[in-house]
Length: 425
Image 1 (tube, rainbow, N blue to C red):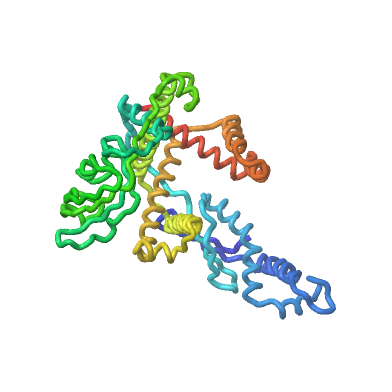
Image 2: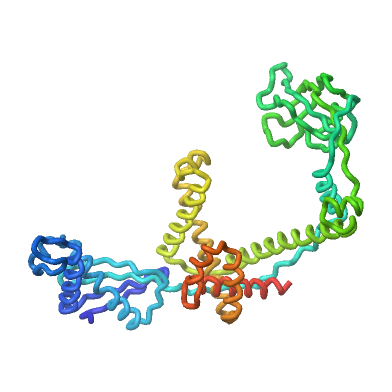
C-alpha cells in the first residue's frame, strides 16, 4: 500500500510515523473523493455526481479535494501502520501532510504508557463516633418540628423564644454597618448569638428596650469585628413560650410512624450509624484513591492531558451554565484570571489521568473480572430507576458490545478493586 514507512519513538509514548503513499493508491482515492464531493454539487444539465470529472474538478476547491483524498486513504493506511509496527494507540492519531507529490503523511500515535504502582494500600476504619448524646440531640431536633409556641406576657426565661430588633454602635458611638436586624428570633439558651447576648435578654418583656456592651469573640467570621466592643440596642417585639411534646408511645404512633418511643429512638440511632458509615466509607475511598495516585509512576503524553483538560473545562462550563453563569462571569466573580483556571485544570487533569492509569494497572495485575450476569444486573438496576421514556431511549446503548456496557464493566471492576483493598484493614 505504501512505498515507504518509517517510525520514530518520542517521549510520552508517542510514535511518529512518516508514510509515503503509492501514487496508484492516491489516484484511486482521488477518484473516490471526486465522486463523493461531486455528488454534493448541482451542475445545470447533469444529475448530481454525473458531470464529467473535468467539470467537477473546476467546481471543487483543491484544498477540499486534497483533504477528502487523504481522508479516503486513512483507514487502510492507519490499519497497516498499527499492524506493521504493533502499535497500541489510545487516542485518534494526529495527521499532518508533509507533501502532496509524492503524498507523504506524518502520523503521530499516542500509545498506552508504561505504568508502575508501588506501595501497600491500607486505610484504617475509624470506629463509630455516634453517641447517645448525639441520638438524643437528633430526637430533640425532630420533636422541635412538632413543638407549639404561645405568646406570653411575662419576663423571658431560658427556653423562651424572643423576637427582637437590634443594632450596634462602635466605641465612638457610630452605628456599625451590617449589624442592624429586624424581627430576629432566638431561643434563649440555644447559644446562637455571640457569648453573653442571650443572657442579656433574660428577664425582658414584650416592648422592653435595653442597651448593653459585648466584645466580639476571636476568631470571628467578620474579621473587622474580632475583639471589638460593641454597644447593642435591643427592642423586644415578642416573647413566646415553647411547648415541646414529650416522646411517648402515643406521640410516636401518631406523628412519627413508629410503634413506640423505643422503636423510634432505635430507628434514629440506626439511621445515624448508617449515615456515619456512608461518610466513613467515602472518606476511606477518597484516601485510598489518593494513595494509589501517589504510588503511580507514569509518563503521560501531552495530547492525553490536553484532551482531559478539554473535557474538564467543558464539564465545568456546563455546570456554570446550569447555575446561569458564563465562564467570564465566574472569573470576574471569583477574582481569577483565565491563566489561573488553566493551571488548575492542567494539574487536575494530570492527577486524574495518573489515578486512572494506576487503577487500570491494579485491576490488570489482580486479574479482576466481572461476569456478564453481574453487569446485566447492575445495568438493570440502573435503568429501572429512570423514567420510562428515558429508559427506552438508553436501553440499546447498554447492550453488550456498546459503550454503556463497557462503562458498567469498568465501574464494577473498580468497585471490586476497592472492596479488595479496603477489606485489608
